[in-house]
Image (cartoon, rainbow, N blue to C red; front, side, top):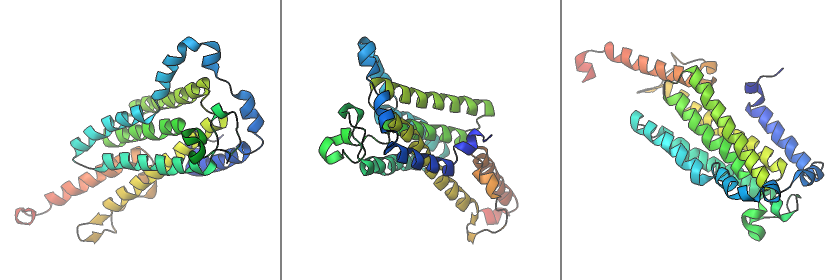
Length: 266
């Protein structure tokens, strides 16, 4: 049986998104229509304000400040722009990647009652014309996922704490999907597609960060270093791999300084 890590690897996510999109274009249309309902308004209208507050947790107004609250102290402590650059990259991935998919598929929101693709569009319906994939579901995966990634790669976080952070992250994703569905804001396939799209964008940003880490590690002051290049598996095993790379880099610098004369150091 495949593990969770294997299922959430980039290739299975790409395949899953393509298959889901093809199904949502036709065979899933009646399923989406049958499953949709404004559950909160129909059964517990008095809870609508509360559900709206819960829905905002996955939106930019909450998720981005939370991510910045994680990234900024880490950037200051490490005296590095890297955490803030990663925040910029996930924002670019969301608006350029997920936003581009939403504009491309032009699916009307569930409030319009039409689950057909290419029948909406931001020009005709504004944000109500670009429903697939769900932005809130994508943000829950992408922004909170980057917060977990930063904490696990920039701090000496123990394995138990890493697992706890991942569990909290999964809870936020589940909350975002459930609340959006209960409010009737999205078709079911929108929400599933949003989770997958957010995962793909997160993978892209993390892989870019890993590539940069390897490039910095294998480059000396006079050019690329051939020796002491870490095995690819060590770098790509997130998040422990990057921790090992950072430790090795610091150790090499310290050993290099120790072997130099005082005059050479000055």
